[in-house]
Image 1 (cartoon, rainbow, N blue to C red):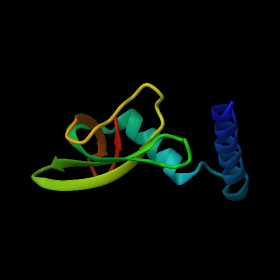
Image 2 (cartoon, rainbow, N blue to C red):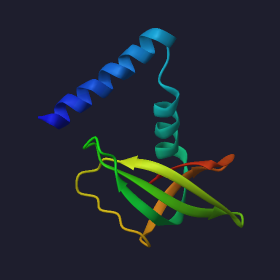
Image 3 (cartoon, rainbow, N blue to C red):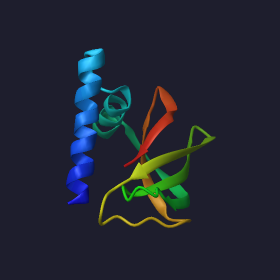
Length: 104
């Protein structure tokens, strides 16, 4: 029941953003593009923290592209997915801007 409310709230926020600015939320568009076209690389989980809102966990992770290390955060709300420090993970990143990434 709470999941349905949070999903409808997110949907309402996206609709509000589209009405206000006439286009999709930039972060939603970035995440969609990375899911569809981002390059996949291996990374490592550094820290996992509950969000406190019940909407998943905040995962801090590290990955390297062309010998440059990056650290990033991502909120993951996949119900069956578990993360722990030291875990090897897939990261999707933008090859033109390697600092832009999501867990993939």
